[in-house]
Image 1 (cartoon, helix red, strand yellow):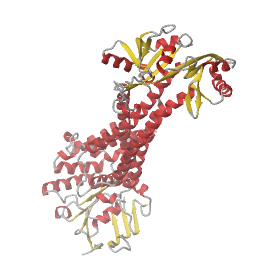
Image 2 (cartoon, helix red, strand yellow):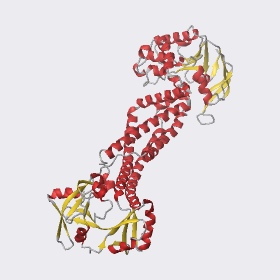
Image 3 (tube, helix red, strand yellow):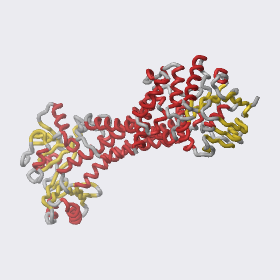
Image 4 (cartoon, each protein chain N blue to C red):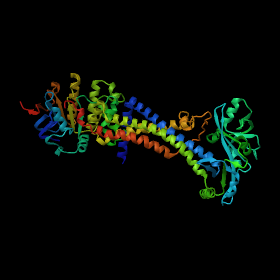
Length: 225
Length: 398
């Protein structure tokens, strides 16, 4: 699956007093089955690129395509269905719902799909076992550790078996041990044929030997040194 | 189809867990809502039950009552006027009746005194069935009376074996109580004293050739209106009342009071719905974040809206069931003790209510339409706006 951005710009609050040009003519190609890191300071535009690839935002101008499929100027419903099928998100703050159990958090993407509870359990169990959180499946997410939360977030991103994983500053609130553990998980996913894009300015991530490519983003542009 | 059904079950399950997660707020809403529905439903059920009880008791009333009017007021009618009516086809019996009101200064109670000739009453057997104790003698002897339960109670409080009433010239007339009406007829008989017609004339100093009104009994029920018209033609200046008109009068009496109370309660219900709208219109940061996360995870706007809809249905539906069940118990098992004074009024001898449990779908449907539907509209419509929260809100650094 080739991800391609062509001359993508993103302007927030266009034609208003607080207008912000977040991206200025981004041209980018990301190969299939790779780990790509978008590196840059806060406000550089790397999260905006991730959101556009993830069909959360539409670019102001330019084109986005994934596996040859044009994704710009599509209605929100199509983008939602595309996200549901092709993309798994890992948020910076993990965004696990604390009052739901671990299992309910992981199966949240399956709820609107009409999947029976038995099938949900069948999909979730191998993931929970793989990430060693099956013994916590009935615990509310508010009662588990930070490392376990991270694994719940990864499991949730994988529940629909999406080919593309997007992780936004995933190690921002983690210690080095957990950050290394996270990168090990990413390597496993790459071995399983996934395409992974991570935004980070954490050297543990950007300088990891298994990261295939690091793209520097500065002031909304790709910065070539 | 299986997928669609499973999807809705999943969403319903999520809605239930969402309600449970915010249980303190939702239980408060449920309690207040159920209370308001309880009040409205109690009035509706009480009105229905009172009206039905009154109509049941009126079944033994004469088909037509004829009264003489003068200067817009009822006056005594000569007994020989009945001869003008005997020729009307379909009239079975014309029975003169003497009745009036008696104020007991000692107890402060106002009695209804009715003098009848039981020998001429076509429904004497039915009258006996309304008595809890004793019987109506055939014919009712002079010096004997059948009374309502409150009258009996006052007599017992006085410790008197005889019912003593005073004539206009302040001489005393005493009567032996030979029968008491059943509790089920309280609504009509609670303050009633039934005497021999001649005793009633004597008590009120009414000449023997006069009566208060005529009870006209008809052979064919479907001819009542026709016969009533003929009576009105034969006795100009008279007031001719059919039983159905009396039924409607009772319905109106209870209905306007119930309506007045319901309007006041509807104000409370409307205020509640406005509050619900206001609450549903605003989203807490936590709720916005949750919706944004769901959208990124692949939930459509329609899915989020479905959750809100089910939340509304569950809360309002449960409140409706709870409120109506409590209202049913309050009216039929606790005799509507909270609202009796509003509908019955205040009196020294107000009746105890013995209402037969009843269930009318249209009443509950009305309450449902006044409570659940507005609440759903008040919560689901603003929820549309909340369901459109952009997915990017959950992403930081934007």
